[in-house]
Image (cartoon, rainbow, N blue to C red):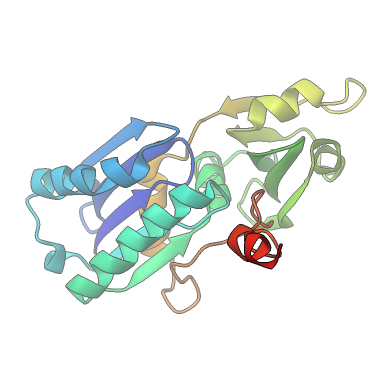
Length: 230
């Protein structure tokens, strides 16, 4: 199976082509960035596909991170994945950023629970807790930092994600301390690809996975309407 993986959910713009039969990546590229995903993504995908020496119609599916993450970044990646999948006549699958973060730790087959955490700003995080074998302990959610920490009642955890340091700094001194802290600006694009290969397109659609509403909300009455009525 040939998988094109795309990630623009957080602070990276990345793509990779995985050949699952050979167990290797034919090409991959990742650029750290907080903004500019829309301008960078399609040229980056073109370079990766050219390096892999593949046509889009040769792919078996396209995998993309669907959140939680930046609302703008998510729209860029998901729109690209859907458009390419439609043009190539291939399925698109969505994977959460939290699961991609956790996968890199779960594959190490350690016993510690894994807390994936993403900065949601305003003293909140998006988080998920899984056991060392990957089974879910606490489902994905958004919560104040202290509540996310309090939800971890499963022993000394492995913290991963772009909010790993945030949790570590607030971790109670009188409780089991984290066994490791992996602060990463974005998940490894390789794990997005491997998760995409295992995902069922029917139950993992390429659509946004939001855990809270946008910070910016439209006014109840548009400004022009307000001006016209005054």
